[in-house]
View 1 (cartoon, rainbow, N blue to C red):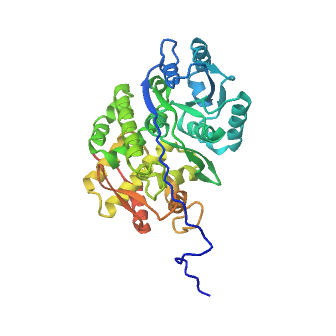
View 2: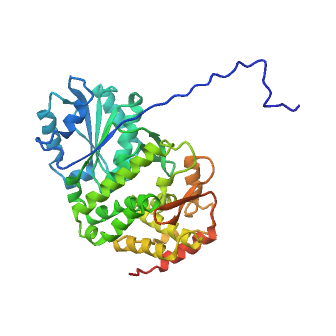
View 3: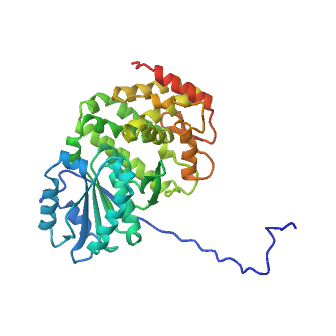
Length: 402
């Protein structure tokens, strides 16, 4: 029997159509020495909702940060006591691992949920997350799923987090060997970027975060890329003014995209802000996360820029300028994991498995962002793996040219 699926059935009532619009508002603040008693930024953010009684707060701190800032816990507790009419710290600060370990251990999520429940937090309470991007992803997921949403204040403490994940709307943890398999779209209540945290980063973490700024500059703002290119020497010598300008512009571009792209929660198949990320996410996994996220993103940017050049989309001089800039900042653009098992497309250690995982993560057809020029992106839905293999070979042989 053939059934006409378009034929109206006498057994069905007419569907009810409804459209729900939800507006999210959050501010990204820039300050220095947030937990100095004379700095009212955090207290002012919490009192801005107009509610008069002190708010319950649970503070979660990145363990890696405490190695660099051993006095931080005492400063946080002293701050909450000083502003006791605003903040009521519900329990001792929670310390959890930083880096990708935070996203690979699901027991940490349960631990945070248990503390939220035991402390009696509600949807008018606050979870304060202080740390790097991976840790913020975990705490954001916990905040979004407890009571369907506890107010989250992110305090990103790395260049990478202040540039990218700390100001966005994504939260998540890794599962089944896949990056961010479990997660939510949930904007924070507020974000506070404190430049003082950046002064204690090692050179590797200082540099790593610049990759996300290069990414957004390449797809959205040629003048911003020019600024990064012309300030590579200043960034290498850790000039804070240059870094602050980069972080501010990078945050602006990310927030403009989230607010004005028409697809803040990625309901479609396009993810321009993930330029270079299909390979980056796979490389992180293939290297057992010995690569920092930003280091993997730099390689992913170099790979997709090289592919764009080989595909005839990107001018040779612009391609060289991109790779020269990445190299001048100190990024390595080739690792052996790029070239392993490339002839075995289904092998879990094949880089090209990242293309399948990238599509699966979003759904729909494969959509990759490539470059037609610096500051000019194009979306494609299929790629030539032979060209990608050639791009990998070029990265292996690439030498910096000035």
